[in-house]
Image (cartoon, rainbow, N blue to C red; front, top):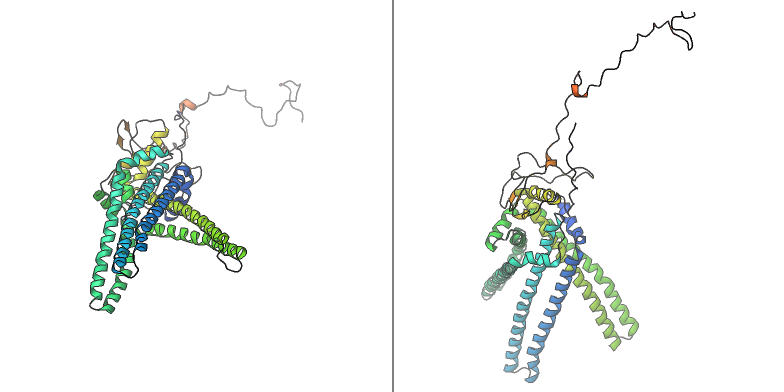
Length: 434
């Protein structure tokens, strides 16, 4: 008898195939992953972006009004007027910087939520916002600290460059202008290069619980050899949303002009014209906030997918994820985090796998790849049994196996000669008729 394996349900597909990803897959899934959990991804991002924008706008407006209002109490052109003006500008600038940093910290937390959701969606897990926050909370201050560090470095570098240019301008203005142009042109590729090399730092801090210094080193190594695909994805996404924003702003521009012409054809600044313009601008701003929220989600999703792809190629993360999915769907409990299984493992470089054929079984791990399974607290990971190639059927032989040989048929009387036959109803002993 042939023994058949026990039936197990098929693994639930995630938002990406569990093999190294191509450029088109990363770019396309960055946009489509939003459908996996739109309430958490888009809803949370939109609420945070809107609240941050309104708070910053109101706070900066309040600080500016409070400081510049003092100018009405002094005579214009006096020394006191100039002192108050300079002080008001400085206070407003400092308040804008502080509030901008606070808004940036909220933006980092939004990105952290999105990255965590995407890494779980890759293994077909859909979490609520509270569950996502529990995973982000232990490293939230580390993420904010990294963002503050980057801002301090950028501001410090710009201050040094400005000081050098201003000092040189006091001696030779043409040389300072030429130097400034060269520095600006040189900073553009440098900024893009550093952006890609440090792109995965937040994802490493989140998924590997790494320190800031270790996360910078990990991001630097993981992006090695993947610079241009990562640059293409990160460059195209803002370009797409920028084009969408421009297209959406065109109807509102025509709408504002049309309302102005209809309500006040003579050009008088009537209240109706002002109200119509304000309403149009508010609608345009609402759509802008929506586009920015979607852009943050898509960019953060792309960052998470680039992180997963880089680890698949360098560390065989896809093998760990497949083993985790198979064990989980088979009913195993107490499974560890597959993203922390083999951090830093090195395997042979691999190219992106071809697109799977619909209905085909998942491809087996290539022979010789280390770490097809890993040990987690309370569970042992191993490659699923389905990954082993099926045994080849035995070649046919001249003699059938004894176990399957049918019983011999009972002997029958010898058949008559071809020229002899008996018609129905005649005796077999009669000679045939010619």
